[in-house]
Length: 155
Image (tube, rainbow, N blue to C red; front, side, top):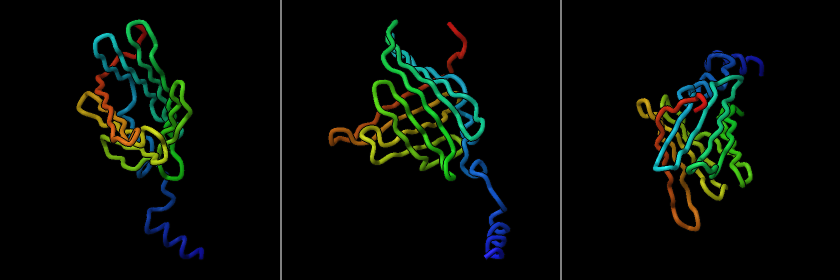
């Protein structure tokens, strides 16, 4: 048995950490502040840099001077995959597991969640496109967010 394990380690490159193939460090491009504005509605997300196999995000939507909604996200490595743990305002927490990661995009899924069932991010030059989609009330829906770099400084 030990020989088989050692042979497998030699073939696969040893004890590879999750970061080596699909870890949170591959999403460093999410780090920073992102903002989308439409009229007096502003959607913001702020992502911390990867550390200890995790990233954190805080997001909020404001309309004029009113807070419409907010969300806290923990993005962490678990069992060789990334898990997106969302804590949205006025809703229970939900977990989504990575199904696709590339140099400039990531998709998370939870087929059992009511809506959304998928969450995605894609880097677009200096911008960021995000989306949620799935089935809601028997209909396929998709909501897109187009972000530009925002300021992390107080205004």
